[in-house]
Length: 251
Image 1 (cartoon, rainbow, N blue to C red):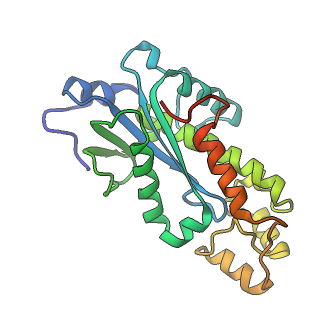
Image 2 (image 1 turned 120 degrees about the horizontal axis):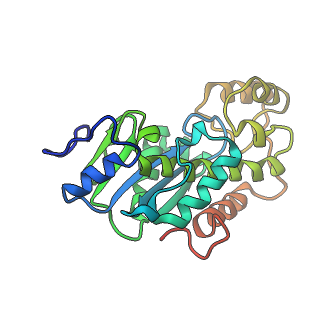
């Protein structure tokens, strides 16, 4: 998953949609882009998305770019455009406890695989960001900085990032004191201070050294009055079935 199919070339100045156009000319269609959000966070879920853009001007997304380069407001606008213009899209949420159980690499591959499986039509080719991802079961290519240079990967990065940010906003209400709405579960000075003061909550990933240290120092785990799995079920259901208050999570 590291080379383009034989005979397929993409010019450096081909633009954001160059990879998809070149692959379609070679007979690969549909083409999916996948990306994830939250892999490096020490709290909260891992979220993966898959997007197939239309092969027409109507499939071109205004303002599309790597989600990390967009402001929160621009990401929300771009999210709405991707959902409206995509031929098919899907999103998968892997809870923190599952990330701990599987390990981050396995959880990441499984999330991407499930996102691809939930598309309305199986893709003929998949484009991923960065390093090759084995185990997806489809021919594909890993593109360095793909979320900046490949439209369908950028679209997937926006879907994944916005979905996860919304979940972390909800978790901020459930676990006040950690400021999840601001740092989104990533390691920051403020997050470290909150861990030292409150200890880890049920949404912290125990595989992270800073979380384990905080747990051993505090000897407590912050929990809700109700069981956290119920919240996870609700969050997962809201994202997978109705992430933008529309009838379906994918199409």
